[in-house]
Amino acid sequence: MTTKLVLLFAVTAVGFGQTIAVETIANPSPAGSLQPHWATTRDGGALLSWIEPAKDDAYTLKYAIRRGSQWLEARTIAANRRFFRHPAESPAVISLSDGTLLAHWVENPSEESEAEFTHVSVSKDGVRWTPPVLAHKDRSQVQHGLVSAVASGDREASLMWLEALHGEDEPTALKRTVVNAEGKVVKEEQLDPDVCGCCPTAIVKTTRGLLVAYRSHTPQDIRDIAVTRFENGRWSPSKILNPDKWKLNACPTNAAAVGAQGDRVAIAWYTGAQNSPKTQVAFSGDGGSTFSKPVLVSTGHSFGYASLVLDDKGGALVSWLEQSGETTRILVRQITADGVAGPVKQIAEGSKQSLGYPRLWHGGSETWIAWGNSSTAKIQSARLVK
Image (tube, rainbow, N blue to C red; front, side, top):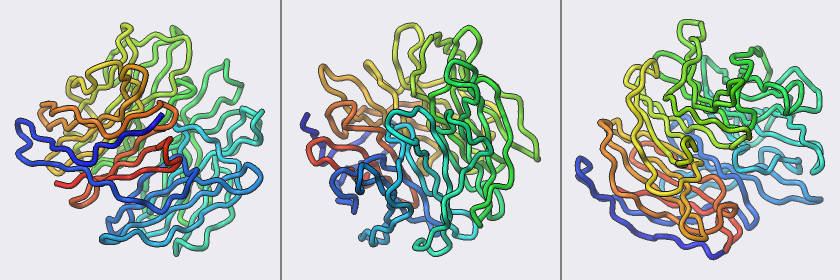
């Protein structure tokens, strides 16, 4: 399916008062690149990571930083590895408080195996990386994946991940691993003993502490988004973000995207409740302690895979996938801090598989989006210019 890109569009809505254009800009990822992910460098720059084909059906994890109007040379993090190639299992790189870069990714032993193992590696200079280590104590052939990470303390990171210790037919646990700037695992703990087993995790840091969003699970197969907070050295009891009451005896591989600035938080998520697939967003002004009623983001049959960034006025820009006849579209929409939804705009169109998991990034005065493209067989990127 040929991917169509809207090269230029205007976003004008009540309360926005400005125009946004989309400018396509090439990135250093080569043909065959997959799983784009954004991060913010210590000085506020954009960092794009991806995996690309290597030898013997293996892949290599690379990244590149953008300075001013140029991409710097792409650098290798881990070469010739068996990365788990699913859009929801995207490898990522984050910057710690001292500028150390920490990368995490998921591998599986073979194409026939369903086991997943999470690895971490760190670099002081962005060139030399420590030998990868497992981010979990358990070494059995089960799932240890769907990772999200954030710089959570002085020279340390918190990784949220899922562990199906007794197999996929038994409860899956939400766990946290703390990794220091030397790449050593210093702590592992369990936060929820029964969660949706194939839905990604999301974590951000607010002024008050950490906020984690994930898809919960009940014995009745209700799979709504839950949040928990780490404040003053303690985790709060988990609570449901909004009672969608989505009952599903399957795993949707679809969860929440979270953004935070200070104590301002926004969460966008997908639900298929009441046979009405949709993407919605809710806001918090107190670090995730309470949230507003959800605002509907999607307008048609949503496929989810939401991404979200906060803007400078406390609102959010949300992207998601939505059905369009026989194809799938990447759509974006601005939502103001008081819940006013702007016009829906299309970024690209193609097959659901080729578009992958679109990712937004915002830093300073710039906002970017990255996604897959079947016609060029590589990651595409564009800047949203105000």
